[in-house]
Amino acid sequence: MNTPTPLPPLLTHDALKRLLSAHTIELPARARFALGHSGLSAAEVAALDVNHVSIDGVQVRSIIVVPNRDGRRPHLAPTRRHPISDDARWLLGCWLDVRRSRCEHHRRLMRTTMDDRGIVRCAACGEIHDLLKTPLFDSRESERMSVSAIRHEFQRARDQLGLDPAYHFDTLRETYLNAHLWANGGRGDQK
Image 1 (spheres, helix red, strand yellow):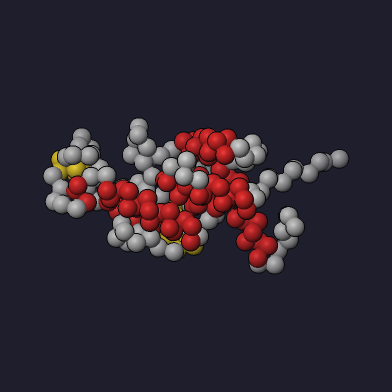
Image 2 (spheres, rainbow, N blue to C red):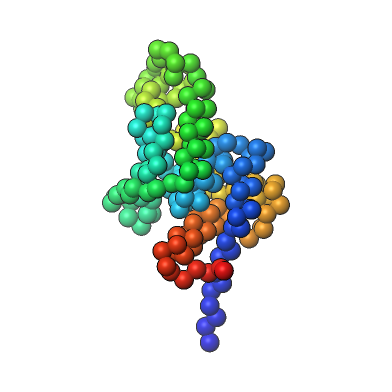
């Protein structure tokens, strides 16, 4: 007899609120968590560039462009339009403000240099000349934050807040999908 696969745990409203509002968790992490709760996977969050969420690097769209991250078919790479929550939109707006305040080149003329690969960059901070083409979330080690770093960051925040150890980054997406299914007349798993 086959035993059914247990359903993944879903975030409680209180746990989600704590993840998105805890000031002990850095702003970009809370923005990534809000995107996860808007239905994006960790790979999709890592793949976002500034132009996927904003036309001008200031205002955040309510419907963003999400690149496909299907490892089985990387040559197809279609994008999809996806609505995000108000929390995600607000946190992303705050994050873009922080990104623009990192270096003077966002307020003044940029002194540029060209790297080994022929990419024009700011001579002061090394960021790509065109803000819209830069990765939305960068890391200290590289230009784009990795999927594993996003998942580990969620685990650290979960442990710091004392949340259920069964929660992982994809629990955010599962919670979104469950709520979306329930709202559209499907069978909800909790209630």
